[in-house]
Image (cartoon, rainbow, N blue to C red):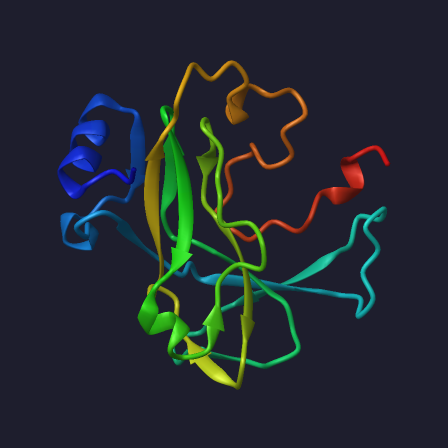
Length: 178
């Protein structure tokens, strides 16, 4: 079951869902549109190592936009800061974004109950495409949780993406023990 627009508004009122900034016109019948922030990042090294802290280079999207190229993984970020305290948030691409050949996440579309941050996007493109800060990039949908959540993301001592940011965050896989 997915929350309806009315239910999303009710949960915002209760504080179970936080979206900052919130604009009523971006609320769909069962989703909320999120927008591309003004920062992108790319990894410095061509070959990445899962056990290493791979460094990124920041790109600020100029007013005239920035052309994304195929074969490069771009990390983007949503303009919106979100908190989800009683639901499972999913970030999906918008159909208009997909029709431009823009994929906004490689694998990480699901958030966790207790996730409180902007969303880092794992952007790839099929062909060169110019993107702009502030353009609609995806939509959040919310699913109810069946049962009590004991281990919310914002309270996990080993959560790797809890520090509030307005810039894309690189992989923290290297912090795992394997």
